[in-house]
Length: 132
Image (tube, rainbow, N blue to C red; front, side, top):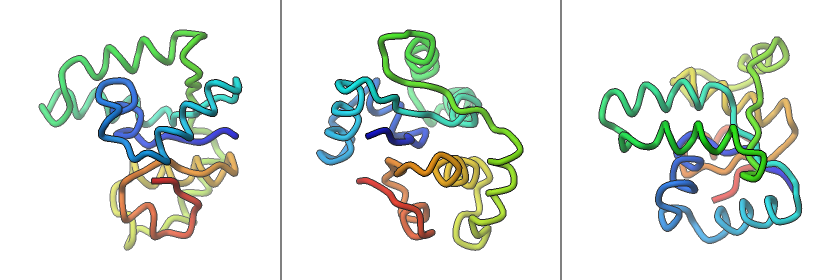
């Protein structure tokens, strides 16, 4: 089964997988082993540039993520932000999830009909299926 990774889950998977919960790590590994893609919202690429530039993520996080999404062997696929995802951001409460990148990630999970791998409690509380 496929899943969508939030930004930190993707970085942790590539950089420090021990930061992921056992169910999250198992889901990622099983998906990739079964050749089911693990998706990443395009906003996560932008967010990674921002977070590495501000020192909130390790400097090499961008390099690792960029290499992974370009590699046909990583199992990671980037999901673009299109009209459907944009429309679904209305279904993710701004009061519950104030950060637009997080709202886009949640809307992407809704659009794909996939669970979201996230530790973020705000995302876990908005009514989408999450794994942590």
